[in-house]
Structure formats: structure tokens, C-alpha cells
Image (cartoon, rainbow, N blue to C red):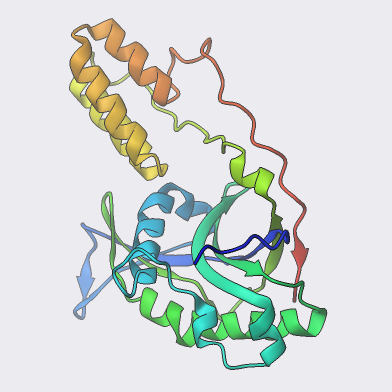
Length: 255
């Protein structure tokens, strides 16, 4: 059955993210690895890998349909009736990576209903969905992450509306920076570093596209030019800039 559009903008509830990073070269003491605590600004580079694990966690039935947290909601019937779905993801905003629960609504929630829903999502992050997710080892360059959607300190919700025009607007991704100096003209070293930077920036598709284009060009200087289309190098200054993203709606605190 085809789902009807309600005309109500989707709402994104953003919450802080933290993680422990365990380096592949960490020192072990008393059989426990030494982890480094990371915040949302540190986690932007791992957005692609984290979202990939979120998608796996959401796909409980293995059919590609994301987990709807409202399937497990047993609170006020009015809230259950108004909220079609609540789906977890991660989202970058102003250089910080956040946890994001996207709400699809039949009707707007009043203040008390929104508070009840936020309390429910907090419980899912601390003892339900998030408790399972933080035990997943996320493999990234140089080590492993364990990501927390809930924390003891500083946990809060920030509300943003997501209109249909926002969904159609292409998102501008800031290019990672790469210095060509220091590679001693080694194109394979430059390619490898550029590929890793793009992957850390959540641009896996661009990383593989660049790799294939460079391998097929057959010319060192052309190869540098291609790499400089994907990452910012000393050769990128005169190249076309990515389009600016549409200005985000101002967030409102829901609690």
C-alpha cells in the first residue's frame, strides 16, 4: 500500500554523539585497550562508516526496511497515533556529527507530547536501540570506534524541520585537504592518501571514482589534476567551488 504524504515537514531530533576510538597500535594494560574519547566534531570524518553501521543495526529483518522506533512505543495513544515513524541515523551540522531521529508525523505534537516522545527516545538510546549499537565495533582507518547515542552529561535534543525542498537540495561537502609537497612525486602515495581522506569524509563513492580515473589517465600531471578535483591541494585554488548548501532552519530546543 502506497504511503500518503501528510504535508507536514519531517522533524529531525538531533542529539550529541560521543565515541571511544581504539587505535590498532594502542597499548594494552590489564587486558583492556586504551581508548581515546571523541566528540561530535571529531566524528565527522567517520560519518560514512558510522551511518553504515546504523543502517545495519536498523535493518533488523534483513529486507532493507529501517527500524521504526514507534513500533515499540507503548505510551500515550495520541502520540502513537500522530507519529508515523521514528528512524535513527547520524547527521552533520555546522562541522559536528549528531545522532538524528527523523520523525514522520500525521499531526503536530503539542509540548507535552513532544516531551513524552523525547523521553521515550532517550530511553531507547540509553537502554534499548542505543545500548545495542554502542557494542558494535566500527572499523575505521587506524582503529575501531564504539559510538554512544546517549551520555551522562550534556544530553539534550535540538529540533529541526526537514521540508521537501531540503531533501531535493544537494548537500555541499567540504573537500578534505591534502598537501602534495612531501610525497616526492610518488603518484601512488598521493592517490592512497587522497583515497583515505575521502573515505574518512564519508565520500566512499568519490574515493573509488577518483581512484579509477587516475589509474586510467596515463599521465602524471593529469593525475594530479584529477586528484585535485576531489581533494583540496595546492593545484585546487582556481577550480570551481562546490555549490553552497541551502541555509538550515534554525533549531529549537524541545527539552
